[in-house]
Image (tube, rainbow, N blue to C red; front, top):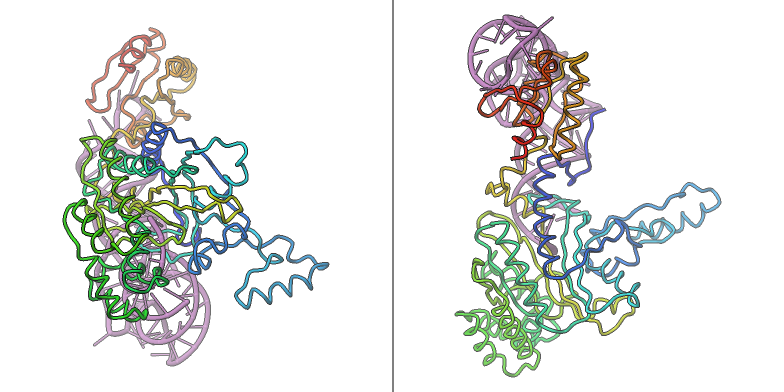
Length: 459
RNA sequence: GAGAUAUUAGCUCAGUUGGUUAGAGCGUCGGAUUGUGGUUCCGAAGGUCGUGGGUUCGACCCCCAUAUAUCUCCCCA
């Protein structure tokens, strides 16, 4: 049979894994520096934990796992009844009761609720694991992809927002990704916008349309708003507000004036202002780009309630490389009320694609063994193994060709593997208790003692 | 969930308006070179033309279905 892998999934070659780990390690170091702790949750959750948390569209994209034992004759009637429900588009626990993780935030909320008595709040955790979505794959969009989340729960302070902004800046600075733009907004401003437009209950529809502003332009947004039944007067009010420009402070001041009648909008402005002030104190001067207030930023997830952010790069045509926000009552879904959280997510698969396209990975990531010993067979093989053992004891990454085949072949192998040095333990070397070291870059070769080889390779 | 384009050797791609044995470069393998790689030279292997049906005297080419990739809508990281 012809081997294949499921749609939207990928193998990662040794070189790719090294590069991905470079990203993971960079982020991990930053998270730890900011006092976040690692967490891992299972690949599958109970379906009931996930359903209804991501909107109708989200529910449709959850990978469901078929129950085992569906062929059990004793349960045939129950299973047939359950299957009827499935045919009607509903889930039934007799057919499926588990599903693959759809994101890391809901499992995190579930974990916090289950372990609330053991945790010290505010609880700061980071999590880097794969998630699965039954979406149609496209460029930069997979059915299995890794999320990398960093959240704080149990604190209302906007210092958290500022710190997360710092983490974004620090990460993209260290990964050297150019053209980074961070946009920031508040769900409260969007709610205020709906109020000012005279349609406070239509916030979701307004924001979904508004989110497409940089893609389809104001004209397209207008069309969509009309389609969604927003009044002409409302649309004019929205246009007036989103056309506000200037520095962040100029925008915030203007928003304050234009939306003075909306309590919630004023609250949103105040929160943005405070978050940015904390950020200014914490931020490093070297970080590129600034953070721009953008009232048209929406973010899809329906659990955000406060500040929201999104990170993009204009260096490569690609969707966002990160996003996040504050959600006031996430754990409320699982019965723990009054716990506020705020978090960000890194789209590491997209970050990888961007870095690959721009050639941003350090070249030295590729190296494996530093030295390979040729296998001369017989007594020389024994001698080679002894030398190999000595090298490894000194912490030098080394390997010996396992078969005593033609030297030509062994050399070609080392060359292809990009191993920088080759050792030749042959008759003459063994008799003298020495070894010949060949530098593959220069082609230079010298007969040395094992001790000399070790100090040379360690340097 | 809807629409569009593509799929020929391990990889990147030619090709045939439907007509015997389907081509190249790179890679792989063998040899020149069994104590010397990366260069060079010589040679070889490798394809049911994505898969399954249909039309036809005859299909890699036309039609239908299906899988995968890419793009648009939708949604999202």
